Length: 147
Image (cartoon, rainbow, N blue to C red; front, side, top):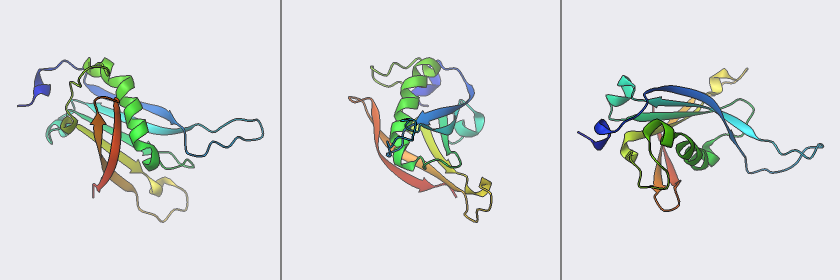
């Protein structure tokens, strides 16, 4: 048994758009810098995830006509954790994490098949990152194919 069995959390599936900045901060003719969005789904306490030992699975999906999220995944993941885990798991980001990293699964998706005229296969990878308890941030992402 893991420690997570005894914690209080709000199970369910949370879906939303998440903003992120790409590396290119160039302005358009109105002096605006583009802010991109990705689709996010946080799955908490779902049977299919629990069967593989994951209390929470977070799926980050790149949207069509945006820079891919892989170059920004640790920043996106950090902001999602800091914004939602305190409410869902009663975990305060400035304290020692309640949820162990091996109970969290991050999935990055690029659904190329949904792009008109695309011949590329979808890319779905599990992202393994390290959580820095001092900086309160993810770092050192590596990818593992889920095929």
